[in-house]
Length: 272
Image 1 (cartoon, one colour):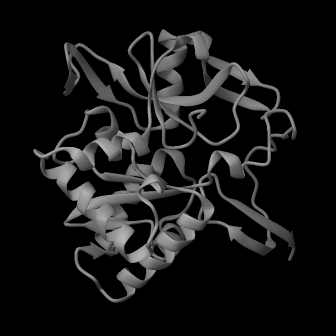
Image 2 (cartoon, one colour):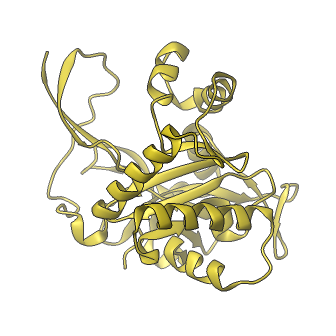
């Protein structure tokens, strides 16, 4: 299976990238650096130390300085992107396969145990198969710490909606160990995302407080991404050419939000 959203890939330069989206060029993977080698980095895997990069601007800066060939203008998406050539991919990390391995292990650390418990509850309440669930993020590449978040992936539209409604019910019932973010926790999240968002804090709270895909599980941050299966993608690279119109403020009416829960999401709009 071609790597899609939720997968991580490792390049021959030992940089670990997170894969973005579902549509990729035939000989490259759209992916952004997540863990980069750093002699003084706080995370270690084997003999290599790493540090984590967060903002989009920092990710581009790292590549432009160290791996400029990975930064390209993509004429189909009409924007500058990070694209890793297939011949430069050393290893592919699958969230589903990792969960399969995690379920068989006996000795788990605190984060691994919490992630597995989270998925067990979601599976039980939603009745989705194990092969529709996965673990991404730092856990996937054994780069986590006790403070890392639980990064869950659900694959397949039907599975996604089942988990969504199950989680919605759990949060509505106040079902510990799942909890929605409070205002102070939303402030922390806003400050973390402030480099990549132009929203006012009041608007951010109004939008984010309604979301069920993030919150606390066993007092740890959890984030869930809903991703369509590969066979549900009805678009190949080049079928549609996009035009980058930059940032704009518009007034419109949302007429179809049926794909709003997915990553990437889609809203159909009309004139207000």
